[in-house]
Length: 101
Image 1 (cartoon, one colour):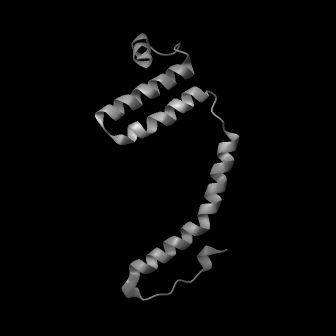
Image 2: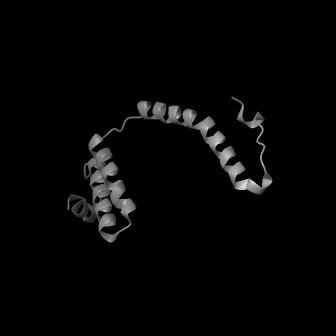
Image 3: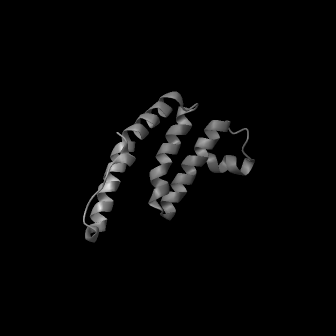
């Protein structure tokens, strides 16, 4: 399908309806390709440390909660993930204590 060759005709008094139609057509045209690309990327690139990856995934909802408690929990999870990735060797001593908390 050659999306850019499509014609969109409509009443200009309903410009938002026309805009919605164009948006739906554009998204419908590119979404399958984007999805396929994401699947290919995910299948090629595996995390080196599944434990750290799991901690990062678990941190995300806490981060997006945008509460003091949620952000603190996200920080703890991310620091623990960092600890797992570096095995504690690259972290300064102060951070090692926080990462283990």
